[in-house]
Length: 151
Image (tube, rainbow, N blue to C red; front, side, top):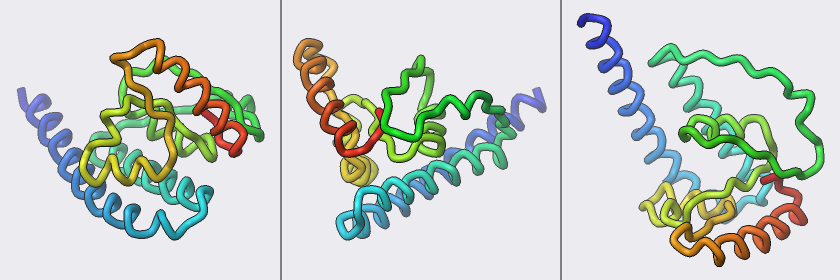
């Protein structure tokens, strides 16, 4: 029971830090991103993701090992993952530069965070309309690859 209480407290500590950091960084991103070139925006986003992963390690003890990074390409490419949580999205931003993740359109409507995310030019799709989403994914995906972003 004591271990479970510690886990709950560590999780709560993580989320408090995560939410506070996200609010602060969203304001900074919204103010600075319009003044920055896209690659610099992605650099800031990668640094934020790295800091959140570090906070997760510190507050909750989450460790991981990455193998096969030598298979990541230097030129833009399409990478696929079996999406389990937001953790791999944070990790992708630290491994693949620059990247435009595919996400549901609703995420861009979240106050502050979604507005900042929009400035990174993700590929937003409407999952309620699968055919339109597929067409949109192909069009936006081709455009992002031409812009030099991986997907």
